[in-house]
Length: 338
Ligand code: EPU
Image 1 (cartoon, rainbow, N blue to C red):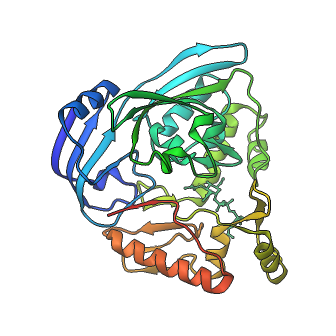
Image 2 (image 1 turned 120 degrees about the vertical axis):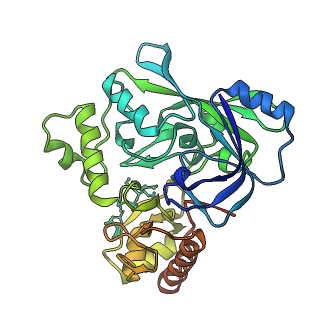
C-alpha cells in the first residue's frame, strides 16, 4: 500500500508531539513500492526518512518530502544450531519485536525492552540500553538505494556500528532507506544483567528468565523515563559525551562522585550527560511549554503546545551551561530537522 499526501501534519509521527507540517509525505509498506516510486519520481532537494519519530525534533514546517517506510511483518527466515534468524519490517514497533522475541523464548533483545521507535531506525542509531545494543543482534540490514532504486544489503560489519552510530548516520545518510532488518537471536539465552540496578530488579521477580528481564527493564524505564503518550519527549536528548581521559581525570578530582565509563576507545572516557546537566541545576526545570524531566535530566519534554524552536532554545541553554561549568560539549542525540 502506498500513500502520497500533501501538506500533512506530523504531530502523530513524532514522540515530542510537535505539530509541524511536511509539504509531501510518501508512505509505503513493501520495498518494491519504493523502488517503483523512485522510477516514477525524482527526489526533491529536501527530504528525510521518518521512523517512529522517537528521536526527531521538528524545528519548523518541512518544505520537502518525508519518506515513511511502514513495512510490516515479523517472521523466522532461517536457523542454525544456536540461533534463529528473524526478519522484521522497518515499520514494526521496536518493542513489539522485543515482546515477540521473549514470547518465543529467543534471547538477545530483552534488555532493549520498551525503547520507543520502529525496527527500521534501530540500526541507524544502534539503539542501546542496560548494557545491550541492537548491533549485538543485527545480522543483516535490507534497504533500497535512493540514487539507483536498487535493493541492497548490509552485513553487520558493513553497518560500521558505534555508540548510537552507524554508516546510516554518516556516509549513507539520506542515501538508502532501510526496509527490513534480520536479527540473529539466541536459542539459549545468555543474560546480561551487569548494568546498574538490573540484577536487583530481576531478583525481585524470582529466577533469571527472559520475561523477568523484560519486566525488570520495563519497570526501571517506567520509573525514570516519561511515557511519550503522556508527556512529549524523545528519550535522551543528548549523547553521553566521550572526552579525553585527561579532562575526565581533572573533573573527577574536582567532582569525585561524577559517573564515568570506559568509552571503548584508547585515551577517551564516557561521561553521563544526565549527571552533568543535573549538576548545572536543570533537572525539573520548566519554562513555558518545555522543560527538563524531573527524574532524568537527559530528557527534554514538551508539556503540550511547544514549538520545535522552543525546545532547540532550551537545548542550546543547557549545552552552554554544561560547557561553562565542565568544558564538555554536549551533542544532541535527537535529529533536528528544519
Ligand atoms: N544521572 C544523574 N542525573 C540524571 C540522570 C542520570 O545523576 O538526571 C546519573 C545516574 O545516576 C547514573 C548516570 O548518570 O550514574 C547514568 O544514568 P542512567 O543509568 O539513567 O543512564 P544514561 O547514561 O543517562 C543511557 C542511555 C539511555 C538508556 C540508559 C540505560 C544515552 C544517551 N542514553 O542513559 O537511552 O535508557 O542509558 O541504559 O546513551 C535514549 O537513548 O533515548 C535512552 C533513554
